[in-house]
Image (cartoon, rainbow, N blue to C red; front, top):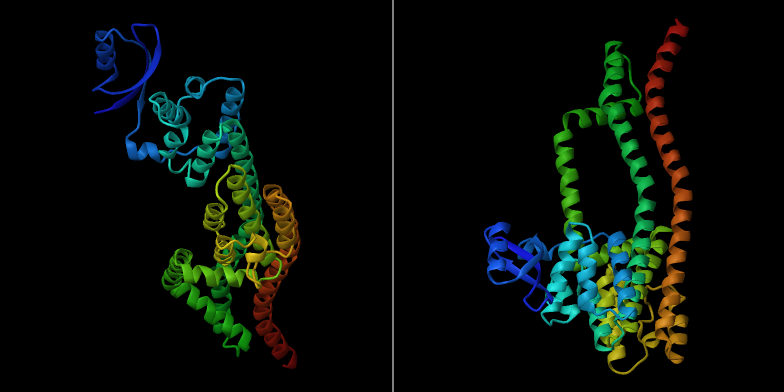
Length: 400
């Protein structure tokens, strides 16, 4: 039976929120009026599993956090603030999510418990920040920190994606050109050369053989490419293979340092958010390692966590051969010895993100001429393989 989120006014003139099941909206209105309840708004809600998977874009979620923060700072209660935001938001996932959270809060549940229902929008580390803000009566500050954290994380993610767009476009274009030449152009020249009964150079024969493989063996090549993609996806899910992959990428010039700085910025961002929210350092490090999305650095951080668990400072607990950037140890030492670890993590996040952007700019500046040089070399070799038999033919004509 469909479920509906209902805003009603009861006999005492008090506005309340309910969640009711009914065959349709008309029958629900009749049921409410029979109970002397005046329905102000009735909205259908999704089923539990589908509802729990709702997720807003960062560009929509961050302003929502700021609006809730401003209302709480102005002295508006969470119940009223959530109801107002739900009423003012456009119909769609945002209104559905706010309505559900408001209904739960109106029934006396803490905000962080109501938020945990939306597992994709509020993963454990975000819900932990809200819980810490509620427990310390600093919820507006926690929401502000959460909005800042999400904004910075989205900025880093957008920077990395933007850096990959140009190389991928060029790579696809170059691959398409090579396939076109091997599958369409080379066979035509091969027919001409074979009809002349020419003795073809090794380079030309090799190109013709590659062209035949592409034309006749494309099903096998397609299966091989699909298998490689499946293996890559499997490697990303297997801890040992993921560790080997991440360790190999760290050794790639320019790219490795970029990946190192991006992972460090993610670590500092997540750990700062949880630390400033009052989450215990051991839990903060465990969550930071999980969210870092880099197996090598995560292993180093978990090793440091074991040292912290026995009373050592974080900067002294990192392995001697850790893969973090060199600047992280002095920064952590300064923060821990002065009691300002949160500020130190903020500086690490900002500096690592800036270095990652600089490395990405350097990588892009080097990548363009490298791609052009590679394309020129490939096309040049193909052209040379075409011209060598023609030179041989012209040489034979001149000798006659």
